[in-house]
Length: 205
Length: 205
DNA sequence: ACCTGAACACCGTTCAAGT
DNA sequence: ACCTGAACACCGTTCAAGT
Image 1 (cartoon, rainbow over the protein chains, first blue to last red):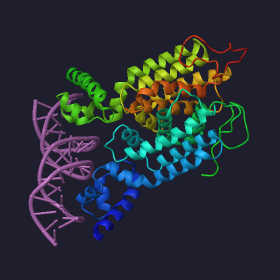
Image 2: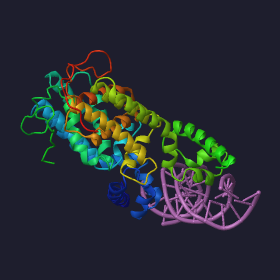
Image 3: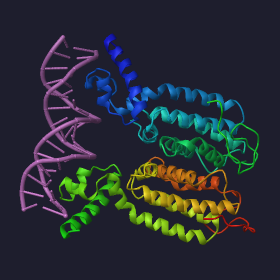
Image 4: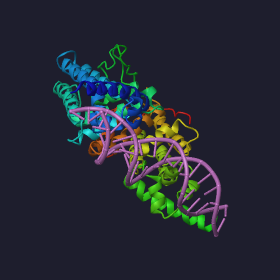
């Protein structure tokens, strides 16, 4: 890659990060090119599709999520690992508003620039689910696709301004549906509570 | 309303129903006017905003849903009533792809043409939730807004082509998180159910 | 190799002019 | 009263022309 091209690429990505953070995944590509002081064709040269741009923006977060999932596979209780992954996924998707719809579309479209990362992430979640199921800690009538769907729905929820304030709490509610022993498990990381008790979010985020 | 205006209104609505069914809530208004053989200004005259058009399209379904919620308040078990409402809501939102995001935005925007209907629907769901909670059948750490949020998330899920096949099943999963007696209840809506409710006082409505 | 920006085919929204 | 469609300010995408 030529030096001037590299410079354009990097700058474009930085500007895109700012604009997409502000306007969401549907941000105007023209606006990004304009703000980057670059021709529209240059943006398209580096990122042939919107999803290619999103992929570049999300790569870091996705890689971190996958790495964390790997750690979770062998650490802590299966329930905590599963719920932690769920929270991490939702937090990651929440980085850019509206990105979760692209992810769900990408999983069904092998041509999408986001396809591979999403399949990888779903696989990571699936492994944590299977482990929890094997130990009798998670209901067995759902599979990795279901888990991914629920994670996506919770991320979508966090994107809606009117619902976002309760998004964290509702992750706990859905987690309690996935886990088998609601009564005795400590979903939130605090002391054990009854079934009707509030399932609290992590403090360390 | 003048006769020619009435005719335009009705025809516009019929065409809009077809186009929105096919293309979703983001369908091109220009396209609708074009297909209705009507000037673009005519569409704007009858439906000043996209939400006004959606409201007209959804009114029937919303009214039916509200009526059914009223019936459910006094019939069957509190759990069945709540889960039935949840399924009805998801089915109703599923009428037009992408409409659930408009609904969630409308609940926070009193100016929206969809605001009133959404508030009414949320209130209907809330009453069913409170009844179930009063009889000890639903967890008490969620409120009507949470129920509405979960219902919206499930409807969103049904809008994603890659997730839709499991949407019905996942309604059951989330329902089991809301209901207290997971083990014995039949979330799907059939015969077997948990122990009959004991002496319980009604929540005020 | 890489960049530019005009060109094309679309939008949503408004509003002067017509009937 | 009501309807029309041009006008305006935007899009995404492509591609000939430049360096």
